[in-house]
Amino acid sequence: MKLQSSIEYLMTYGWALIIIAIALAALYTLGVFNPPSLANPVCLLPAGLSCANYFLMPDGTLTLNLVQTTSSQINVTGVACNAMNSLTGMTPFQVSIPPGGNATFSVPCWTGYSNNPGYAFQGYLIVNYTNTYTGFPHSVFGKLLVKVS
Image 1 (cartoon, rainbow, N blue to C red):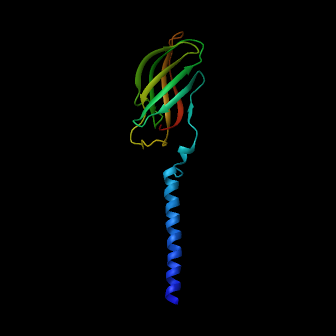
Image 2 (tube, rainbow, N blue to C red):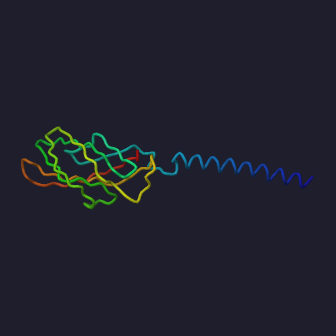
Image 3 (cartoon, rainbow, N blue to C red):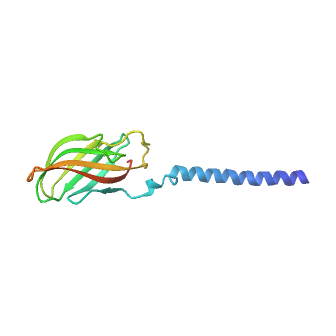
């Protein structure tokens, strides 16, 4: 009788542990343990520039539709996307954008991170441009949170 009682005890807790393991595996598959993947995508740039549309491909290429709202035309000379707030990885461009206009850029954004769809990349977006009216060059730094699509 004691043996039967102990075997029933082990079987009951064994099934409970199996159910808990399956539930944890399902939560891991859904990405619950990667909190940034639950956040909404964000692209924050200083006044005068904004992101109209952007997405990150599994190969690390960021496609970005950049809108400029300054009072004069600008010439975008480079765009970079990286995990550090630095000018490394700048992709050169020569694109003129009129006031209120936009342009689309594709730049390599990152390496060494998970390329699984749904993974969230958090880093920086850097845009170099020259104001055609004043001739002054500018570098603007923005924050980027985007999911791999």
